[in-house]
Structures are given as structure tokens and as C-alpha cells.
Image (cartoon, rainbow, N blue to C red):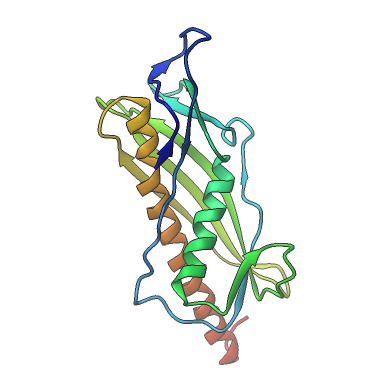
Length: 203
């Protein structure tokens, strides 16, 4: 987790408060059980509610209430961080013939569509917040745009303390966890679809 300076207050503060910029850098370890596939995958731009996809770091102090940390921000938007983590995890796994962002020119056999539902530090009644990331992912067959499978993923990582620095740091393992789960699911689900289709039993 990379950051510049530190500040840990909700709201308030003076104009002289230095801003902290946080840049989670998750590393995804491939599961040896993931299948090695010969098909290609395109990753569509992830979507999210405008209120969620912002450089401000969202925190939920109580149910039904959203605030942002004063003097702190992300280096990238949450959707960009999600896309980067999923893409890099697949690239580094060595388990797929090719993976790239949609529009890169790669002739993808499948398309991964992700909707980021939550990316926030949620207290949920605890003494320290938990980095909470929720993503709905859909795998589409590129030829007919039919949904092969859809699944919702949720990752929670409790921060070491209530400070904004620790809250932001908790997003790195949470992002690594959810990207790893999405990568494994995409490979396994896509390969199962290919095998069934090649057997002539389903498309």
C-alpha cells in the first residue's frame, strides 16, 4: 500500500491539512487448481454508481450513512483498481492464452462484465472499519452475447485500527481476494462452457 502523508479524520479539518493519496497494489497468487485455457478473454469497463466510483474514500460509520475521509483520496477510481487487479491476476497466472481490456484488438472468446456495488470502509458496529468490496460479475460468450454465468463476490478485510491509513491499507488484501476469486471463477466457468459446447451438449 503506497501513500503520501497521513490524515485520519472524518469531515472538518483545516485547509492546511495535507492530503493523503492511497494506491493499493494487490498481488494475486494463482491457484494451481485453476484450469489452463486456450481461449481469450476481454474485460469490459467495470461499472459502478457514480457515488461509489470516486477518488474520495467512502466510509460507512453507521448503517444507511455514507461519509468520506477528509484529506484522503485514492490514486485511481475503484473501478480502475478492480479492472487492474483482475487483469493483472490473469496475466500473471499463465493460465490463459490472452486477456486484455475490451477494445484492445484482442479477438476475445468470452467477455467479463463487472458491476462494482460496494467499495467502502464499513464499521458495521465494530471498533474499526472493514474494507468492503462487492462485485457482480457476468461471463458472456462473445459470439452470441449470451450470459454463461453470473455471480456476486464479497470481500471484507478488517482494518488494524480506525485510522484512515489503516482503513485504506485494508483494501489491498480485500482487492486481492476478490480479484483472485473472480479470476478463478472466470477461468473455471469459461472452460466448463467450452467443454460442454465442444461435446455438443450445450452452447
